[in-house]
Amino acid sequence: MNKNQLGRSELQIGEIGLGCMSIGTDEKQGVFIIHEALDRGVNLLDTADLYDSGRNEEIVGQAIKGRRQDVILATKVGNRRIPGKDGWSWDPSKAHILSAVKDSLRRLGTDYIDLYQLHGGTIEDPIDETIEAFEQLVKEGVIRYYGISSIRPNVIREYVKRSNIVSVMNQYSLLDRRAEEEILPLLEQHQISLIARGPVAGGVLAEDGRTKATKGYLEYNESELIDIRDELNTVKGMERSMEQTAIRYSLAHPAVAAVVCGASLPTQIEHNVGASAVPPLSPQELSRLRGITRANTYSQHR
Image (cartoon, rainbow, N blue to C red):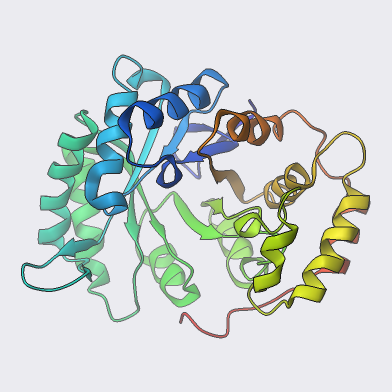
């Protein structure tokens, strides 16, 4: 597994990470999937306190028992339950972050988190207060580094300017190239890494994803997606599958340190990890792929 430095941190993360949200709520199966990933060279495990109301962190915690030293553990904070109110409420306050991290540590069965990420964010948030919370946790040794998981360019710019984030988790794929104009150049300039999620666009860019194209994706309609899949099929060649080609596209930008792929079956783990072994895309292939999709931009999420 190829590894990259995460921003200006000392963390070396495998370029293919496991998005643990997809492992389900059955502990035996979830632990099995995580072990499959670790055994194949994955070291970045990404979870969040709201996934299955904390159950996901508990399963990750069981899976890393005895293997903590092999794992770069990433989780997220910023959402909480309010008694008497349905759903999750957004709370990036210092008080909530300092409280929530204790629950995450307990569920994960560890005394430190490698990468603690703000799970969202708006420009109206008390950003300085949020940063204070993360900086305090770093000083206390509770977390090693922090980042944000956001698709809002204005929010990302504020954290780049005002904080010591080492990473931004952001949706980025051949079909969602919004980060290319506003986010990736900014992060590269400041030596902050992008952790790309959704590299196969919800399965639309997978070998068996043709039926998923019927629902469209962002501003692409079914007909356009089928044409893109056909073109992608010709670019992949003999050495890569369609989804491996899509993953290599997301990894091609120098600001991208890793992609996070979901998996619920061992075969999916094997296939995703295999993207690290196939040849990277050539400049000609990258140019051709960019020619069959749009350089879409952020019109919302400000």
